[in-house]
Image 1: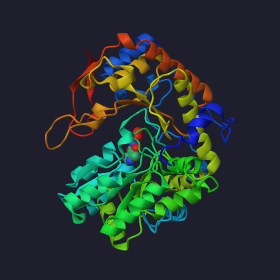
Image 2: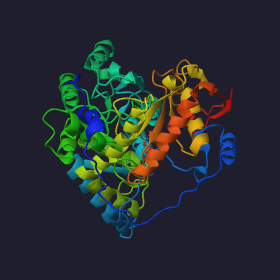
Image 3: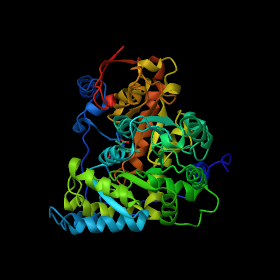
Image 4: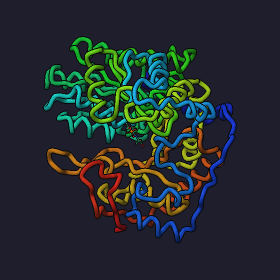
Length: 470
Ligand code: F0G
């Protein structure tokens, strides 16, 4: 199975067209400023796309987080917010949506994903424990570290190679997990942190066979599996598309089966769940639920609102129901594949196979003349903005941060610039414009200079760091 060519890749070159399962009811005009104005804006932003004003951006591919378009049903739901402090009916709607669609028993809402990561990390990680996971995510690992844990990457080696065509590059390497059990003892493993899809690997999926095998290994040693379900709908799509035995199963069936092999999940609902703000925790174990429900009142809000308004909870409940529909996921990922196909046809180096939420440009291959400490991916994000006003995000050495023990930079194998596609927001014509801009920047690659970091915040530095041209 792992060596077969993903069907999705074949479809990139010979598929029937898909179309969005919706039409547009309201539009938001876009703003384009001149190249001179962009140059000025970029310098003011310290060459960090997070520090640009959104008004100075033309096509915003910074993130797919909180940037999706809500449906008319979700907007109608906003008017049905029950803004009671306690026991809002919208909470019960959310609770049953998560129970029905993801299959977990107990739900705690949070203001967004990192709120959920904070609570679960504080609740279950004991100081000195280790947390194996399929590649780090910035906020996830930080909360694990702040709770006294140490993250260990147990993703398969193929994930670190942008050109490797493995269909499930998010898979966990069970030998790496076994080696950690042998070395540290099962009792020193807080839990296995599984993300589907894996953001930092390029939106790469985990196979059903892999999570099943991990479950069996963990059962043998009494270890829990906690799922970062942020883009799990998209993971389910890749299982349907690529894994034997799942072609005729619905996204809903695949999602529920996958979740059934895990003990709990946290969610950034700003992605898959089609809302602008929100998150949740979902667990099966009552004792853990009680602990989380207690912690949420300290950091987020009462356990029936978790930092969200009733109207947000309602939009989220409806978003969950919409997000699990097969035709939604097909067109969502179809748009990402479309952009990937254009760039692949022009031989532009991107992470292959194309993942679920974004195109990841391989900045090391773009700029082989730049050292990693000259921030090739940050440079590429800056150059793209200069060329066309398209905003992307660095996912390389700046995002990786520093080892808290030694203070040294982490030097991740992957040095990527992410073009993240918001859900239900841009059209195919926008994707054409994006591809052409990437090509222009690629054609000018040899004369591009790198950056140096001139300001570095302590936590999650990529958000606020400042750079200057070398
Ligand atoms: N887990 C994953 C896999 C994520 O991608 C994110 C956020 C989080 C957790 C944290 O959730 O933002 O709601 O607090 N990712 C965003 C991104 C920021 O752009 O990829 P949050």
